[in-house]
Image (cartoon, rainbow, N blue to C red; front, side):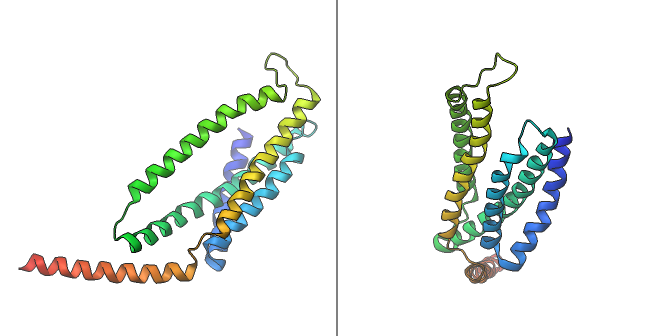
Length: 194
């Protein structure tokens, strides 16, 4: 329960911190800050998750929640930008199609992650029938808990570097969409009077 409270408190602190970065530097830079900070957090888990000093797990939970809050804050906002970009190019709002695709990919990723974790635990020698795991098993759990997310975060940074929607471009797209919608509303109201 204490770890849950630590995560909640730090998660709440992550929202204004990354919102401020996004406001000052833009969403892409804020998301880059989230990803880089999270890499350092997972490097830190090597020391946070140590059997010798158990209370350090509070820092791990808190720091992961801090960056997680920033990620989910910016993720939704950047998705909205993608939808506006798509609407400009296609003339259609396709939130449902995008969200169902994202949901499906997320569920497949969670299923694969859960399934692979059983093979990884077996590979590193985890034995659920014993009270204490071997030193090798504990080392590998700690090592992989840091390395696997870091690899994914580095891939995400490379993908973010190719993300073309800058603040300036999104302001231009927004003006274009509002102008287009204004014309469509005007035509619809004229037809309604006839």
